[in-house]
Length: 212
Image (tube, rainbow, N blue to C red; front, side):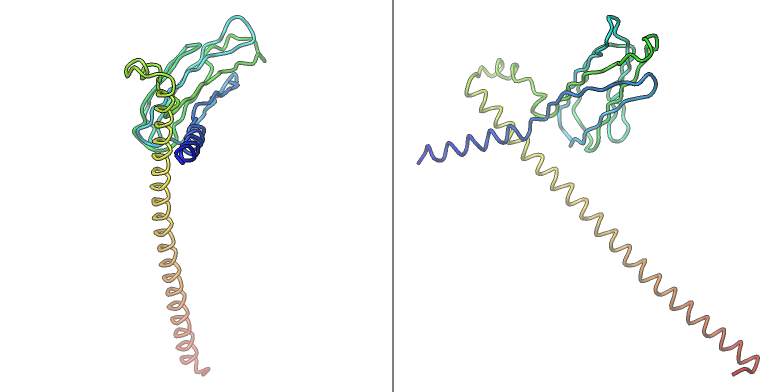
């Protein structure tokens, strides 16, 4: 009986770990002029860690500039004239976080493709599990269980975040529907009043002209 319970639990945990695997590598092809940006919608109190490096077809790697902003436009990271780097922060606002890259070294050959490899990790994927294992002196199965515990907590937080977003959207939708209903009633009232005044005016006009 115990084995039948433990097996589904491990399967659920592994599925949970797969659901919160929020680390991914992105390739960006930078134009000679202009900016290339990536964004991700992230909730509050989430750790974000990113590494980036310029990959060029020739030996001299051109330099780029990087700027990361929060949903409300706050500057979280800004670097210029670099070929590689890293940025990390903990979100304090919920919404779309934007990372923009542009070329600052315009001496490269025309038509040469300039690419940037961005390794973007959020939440549990950005956690330094090696430091956790050394600090708490855990390894093997115990460490994997800690990772799965963190994965389940991340899923729970995501569900709460989605529930809050759904509640906000429902409130906005209800307010919009109420405003549309009142606008429709007001429009109908204005039409009725205008029609009544028009009939009254025409009636008086015809009576003065003794046509009726």
